[in-house]
Length: 257
Image 1 (spheres, rainbow, N blue to C red):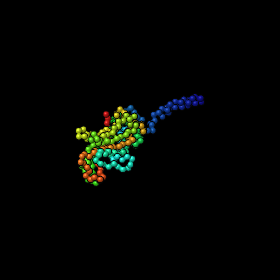
Image 2 (image 1 turned 135 degrees about the vertical axis):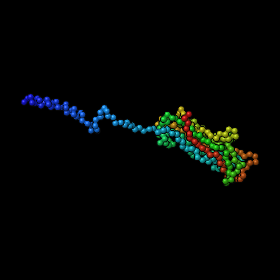
Image 3 (image 1 turned 180 degrees about the horizontal axis):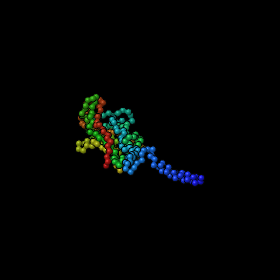
Image 4 (image 1 turned 90 degrees about the vertical axis):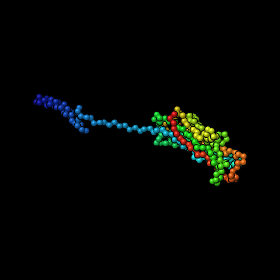
């Protein structure tokens, strides 16, 4: 009786490893087992990463029309009339230049910018103001009066645009100049770099609201109608005259040098 129990116990003990082995070789639920001659299915590796926006230069506030008026007589409201003597015309512009870097998607605004990077291809901003000529044509009531036409020259009546830059422009290394256009018959100045940032001063990468920016706090324009020569007078004395000058083009470009 004891032998049978012992034998039964031995059989149970021996059968346990066999059961474990059978479980180990059972096919996996996902498919048949792979032998050494089979080809392992290709395993795809993926990773999702958001790319940073590319830094781009933007310009706001390019001047539109220059509506210049003659000076005011003392503190009174009456405009000075043209009497044949030199008369300065001037205008204070309503807009202000604002040049800054921001992302190519989130373009920013007059006071904000988004994170961005130049991806190792840093470029700097260059703002140019230019005219095709410096001729001011005189008309009254739609009629030309060529006797009062003039061309702005370097000596007396340069067509000047005055830019007053924010103090931060200088602190951050920007160059800001006030263009003066003239044609004296020898070396005309018809294009001037009004604002630029040296390449070594360009920030990259740019943090949110911490990019390079330069803006003006005021812009003005002026030119002087020269004195009429001896015997020269308006074709229609007493009429209201308009002097129409050149078109000013403000351009933002970039340079890698």
